[in-house]
Length: 219
Image (cartoon, rainbow, N blue to C red; front, side, top):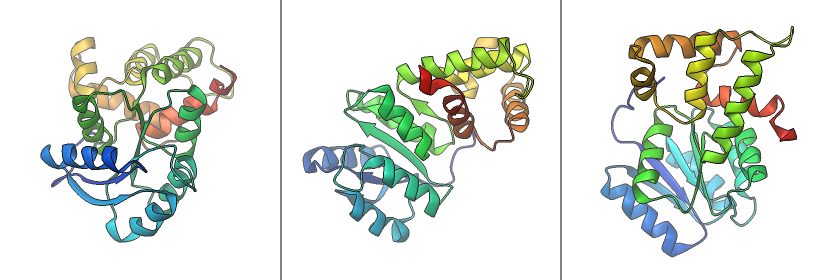
């Protein structure tokens, strides 16, 4: 789940602003990513995606119809293994929540630096959720609720599982979590896997989405 992808990460860049799209494509190419397709709107994205089959789609949320949320949902339906990373000018929680519920694996605001963007693409390609800090705080609060006031119908998280998941919610990698808690990388993986099994989920992105869908809409 956290292993490095074999070969260069393939990326599709979707943005309706040509200068921005070209700049992002150039940064990705210079960093060693393989940009296999670009698109300017939702229709182009859905038309070009089947042939390109990128591992990661870097997608602007505010694009001509269909918008980024609708496109995300359709891309995930077409290929459940695809990682959609939203890169948007909006940092509104409602937009973030809508994108994640549609299946986005990550969400960055456009004020992110070049280094932050490249790191986010790498991490999303490895299966790690990467979200703007505001959402991480909301997810952290939901993990706290699950661990401290478990409902009889909800799976119970141990103290250690809760501690690890709080760090996952903050966006830390397995390696960073292991260093913070003085644990082995394998132990951290085991804690996350155990929690995923309890929640009957398959990856950390689903885990983040679960937290959002169980009470965060009221925040």
